[in-house]
Length: 197
Image (cartoon, rainbow, N blue to C red; front, side, top):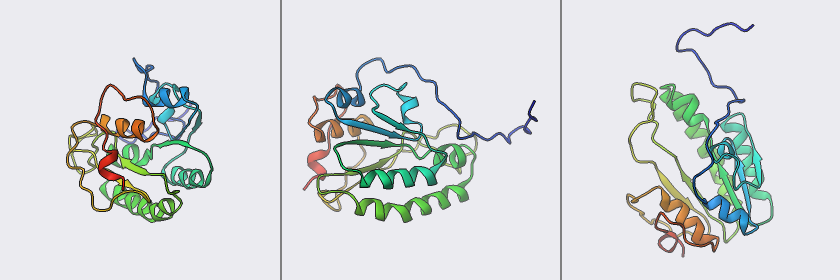
């Protein structure tokens, strides 16, 4: 029998799993897999989709391992989607109200981002966003209500493009569907033509 943690001192472990319901309708991941395209998830992403639409799932222990996996995948040949979740931003720093740790994790990611982007091939793009707000300076451990960031980079991405405040997070899925030549999704408006040169 293990010892009990003091109230408020609980820590999520790398063995954490999100047990979600299967999505109620087809997702971008489903459409990609049906078309024979690779969908590689890094972190807990496959759990969020109840494993559906995923061709390879790589679970990681934290941001450092996730960043290394993403960098390795950027060297791999083939067409497909790498869908990664760097969970430490959320579970270690945002929910734990640790702005100093959050800042360190951002700096670490920033150091690794340049080499990752340098490995992108001419037709590839990197989209960086968040699935929700999680301001580590807001009291409490719930998600917060600020807009999620959206950064797009790659060899064919037009520099200095301001995508403004998007109408929906679904715009990311719509953009990826267009990029991969899939049928249009029910929700979202693609911004591919706005960013691609």
